[in-house]
Picture 1 (tube, helix red, strand yellow):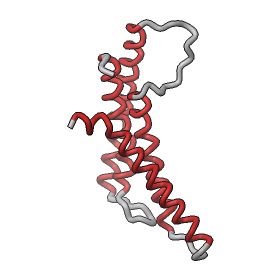
Picture 2 (spheres, rainbow, N blue to C red):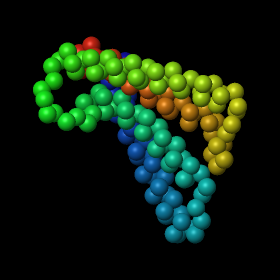
Picture 3 (cartoon, rainbow, N blue to C red):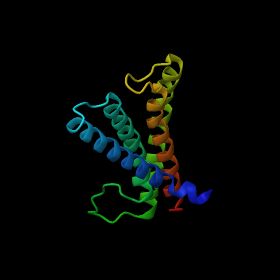
Picture 4 (cartoon, rainbow, N blue to C red):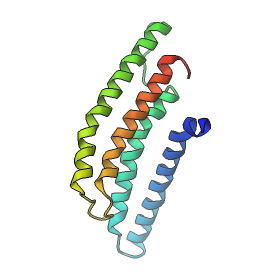
Length: 144
């Protein structure tokens, strides 16, 4: 279970990237060979991209891919304080997504081409920010 938790973002991001590539290749082939593009392909790629965008936040925290300009050496205490601050920011962003999730679950709105409940699209920011909170907490604790 611990290994799955450690590699969760990696596996999901790989799945989403491969899915986007396969669907886009199918879209191009169908456009030029069949002279017709299925309507669902563009929407599916868009939703996979949304999910991969929000999952890349905890991925970049986990692998320390955040953008920094190292002009001055930063102490471990200051680095930990920055991650505690980020942890609180991600917790606030997660809480801010809850009304959108409630609206999406109550409205029963579906996407036009796929018929997918929009709840799953609105779930991406919540999952991304929750995982970013957990990864920031791990970094702040020092258990990289």
